[in-house]
Length: 345
Image (cartoon, rainbow, N blue to C red):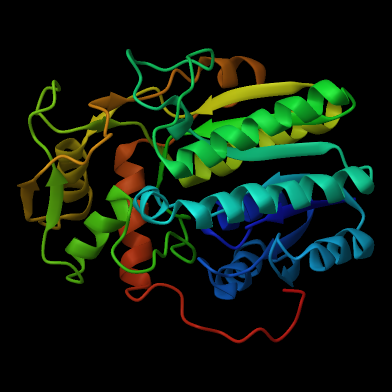
């Protein structure tokens, strides 16, 4: 039996591929490569010494998705695929609703038709909107404040309705916080297109000279240094969380929601300082206006995942910084372009 990863060539998906292959799973990746490169999967195979099946296709293409299920004995799905930039979602909400929600509906309908009812969904802490207090537990009210977050929230609601209609489904919703870091080998990591949306790759690109300085959005928040506080989690800890969630999902039909985070918040300037300390690089920065909708502080209470999945984040902020820089200096231009030459790597 095989595990299907939609969007498995992306940042979090590729690191999860490594953990799944190392755990002895057979995996199949479906990715349209709109925000990823096939080189990531080739390097996954180099790291693990194991092969995987790859399909170049889009979830909106029903025929291609069906082909994956016809040709492979899929036991469960980890659903990563989707547009993911908050700012872009505000500028082009229709594209986000069409891609993220319609694509998910195609996937869920085909899963149902093939009797595949085990699903781990890549959700996001953005579903919480601006929390009134921290740390955030899974029973906090949800209320996303941008189109990207609302697509995640809507897909969660769809999956809850699917489970109510048919309790044979086993669904795990993973709300994770701010992924950072890279694989220890430096072979795979975050490779954003254009100016990064996330803080760590932004800092990396300043450090390597691709960007002049770090723009800090606001320094008058009610936090110790005035900059926004977030929960940064190493991508390999996050990947391991998916493996743990998959094990639970396959073995017991249920619907569960888990926060994946460290439970510790770091401000923008604390992360900058940690990066400088871990790498010896100096990060020039300037203060600019706040972004609308940014919370002063947002970090997880991960105790439910620790208790029920026997999972916890093991890597600290220094490892995130060190591994991110190792990836960056080994891949200053990110992944090189490679042609699609085969479906198995």
